[in-house]
Amino acid sequence: MGLKIAIQKSGRLNEDSIKLLNDCGLGIRNGHNQLKSKAENFPVEVYFLRDDDIPQYVEDGVAHAGIVGENVVFEKNKSVEVLERLGFGKCRLSIAIDKNDQYTDPSFLMNKKIATSYPFLTQQFLDKHSIDAEIHEISGSVELAPGIGLADVVCDLVSSGSTLFMNGLKEIETILNSQAVLIRSKNLNDEQNVFLDQLLFRIRAVRKATNNKYVLLNAPNESLDQIISLLPGMKSPTVLPLAEKGWSSVHTVLSEDEFWEKIEKLKEAGAQGILVVPIEKMIV
Ligand code: PRT
Ligand code: ZN
Image (cartoon, rainbow, N blue to C red; front, top):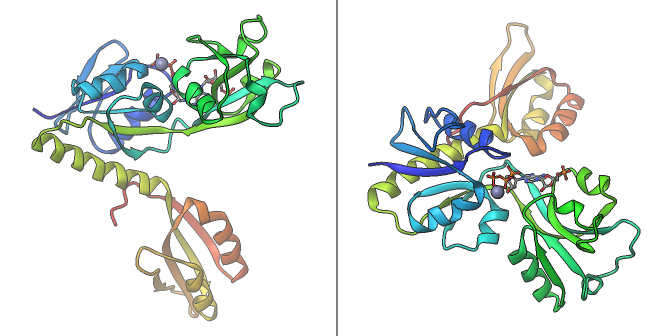
């Protein structure tokens, strides 16, 4: 029967979700005008839903797994399991106030009106700091609420911060850092678990590959020891002689995080002709 996976129908997570599943070899077409679509190469059916509905579908087992922002997972507070962070859809849920107001600590929020689409997480934050405040749940354009006198404060998703800035607001507290995650239902049968494990294996290989680069460089033999000491490699770097005497070619894998710093050090150590190549899949 296979797996049913729920992803966002349209919006910020739609394209990256489809790309991830296709990088895993599933073969899915975009579902703008359809509710579901069968993968061509894997026993998976994809359901295209509003992101807000995904945790409920997964809790009920109507979808066996889903891709959705952590912000939605924690706000909906359904009984689902977060399996893996997926590295896209990054944002934070933050509290913001008038840019001219002085803020020192959460007691500022006492008896204020807070507009948000995230009442559960906002209340959780208030409770943690023993603050009494009034939450106004609104479903969109939260950042406009102070300007029209609906609220003093907002609690909304932020990525670049430009929406807050343009509305004369400033961020004062981050409640949650969020990104897209793979969630799963708690009631899967053995066959569904096997398929989901296979999919997770592929997702990890794709994610590892995007976080890593294949690096090739030329080095004079007298610098080889120093250069190799800078490089991790999957086991250890590959070293091959060049046609030109006294020179070698060194191949290795570097993670995105350490990449720029390492490249500088490699150049200082005498590396030349450095090539950086994307990796498609990485299985370690
Ligand atoms: O129709 P559906 O209900 O499925 O979609 P939606 O309108 O609820 O969600 P959508 O597509 O806007 O966002 C889906 C998910 O993307 C969110 O749940 C987050 O997990 C993630 N995400 C990442 C964001 C943002 N970044 C983001 N910047 N979701 C919303 N925003 C909005 C924010 O609400 C604010 O209005 O963008 C604005 C702020 O952006 P900056 O860059 O100006 O700070
Ligand atoms: Zn939504």
